[in-house]
Image (spheres, rainbow, N blue to C red):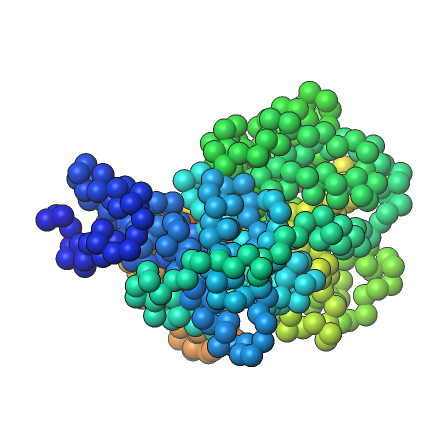
Length: 579
């Protein structure tokens, strides 16, 4: 260990000589023998922290890895905090897991630690999608909940999403307070792994049925489903937790022609049929697209491993399946839902939608034109869930969405829900088909009505300790010296969500913004482009979101206008000078 920093050596020694199991110590010794200092440094240079998605990391031994001890420490810390917040109460939690390798094992460890601390545990009897956990917390009046998942990350990852009593993911001040409690655990002996079986109750089908009934209530045009019940749908859960509930939900609202990708309906944490289990990636949908072509399907949907995000493809005018991105699908959903509410006379002025600050501002425009409020929150669906809870009983929530393929329709949950999203996307497709249109046609109708909006995500991976430092340096550079122009458009406003300031570049005037602190920067140009920069909360990446727009007088003008926006995006990318 001579080549390792002293702080990391101390951490490694504490694991080698502490009360850790033999398997963990053996794995560390092997890494020492191979001289893999980079791996050891990354595994021990820091503790895992709650980010936008909770606790997430590579599985293996170490303080910066997901394993029995980091899971146990997080759960013990959460247990201690729950007891402080809810003294003299019987605290109740729900635990669920997806198809990840070791997910069930980590779920059982979590249940043991909670129950050992006299906390009552509702434990799902098999894998379930994340939104059902959110629903169950509310349905069972629980104080907290844990979802064991790493969402769309590669197979070597696992994770631990912590939820609060409203059914949404933990946010400030609770997240920081839990971390404080976790940090107070300085020895593995402080973790109580000795579970009490009397405090653990299995749940399953009864919650499924209640959840599916709530999902069904999201329907706004049941007649369209009756008329087009045989709409040809291809669905893939990509080996994950939505394998049963999405087909059940589609059948429950009346669809009769659901075609499953059987190879990807096999529950497998190794994701053998894809490179990356992410419905944002075309490769992950390749099997579904091939089947759609074979059978002439009109809609393809695929969900990520924990069933909270969905990617779709629709048939274009040439009869080929075309992938839609998260912004396009989200905007189509918002337009469809608001039009349906308006047609039924349900828009009274108290309705609202929610989106994140890096999601297409076309949503804002659609909401405004329909007399519906559109709230913008920080990146992470937990902020959407938090706002929903604050506005409950005051305003009526219609839907929420984010550009990373996550949507929620209805108030049954406080997290993105691919199950309900799949049902409404299918219904929306049936509705337009009933009018002699495709969802692809509806996309162009939307652009002609509101303008052509185009977004580009640039995601740069910087792994390990050095990568984390490089990401910090990039943010520091943009924070200290905002670009004077991007893509030939003058930057007129800079918003620093960490400092809580909005700066008028021309006058130098600074005013405050009403957002929690977050390491995000946004630059607005004179022509209406918006460029956002933020480090990922769940992956070793820095992300740049480029949003541009122009008018679209008619469908025939699309090719030229689209090319114009592509050139603008590329010019902005070059001006950012990041790689």
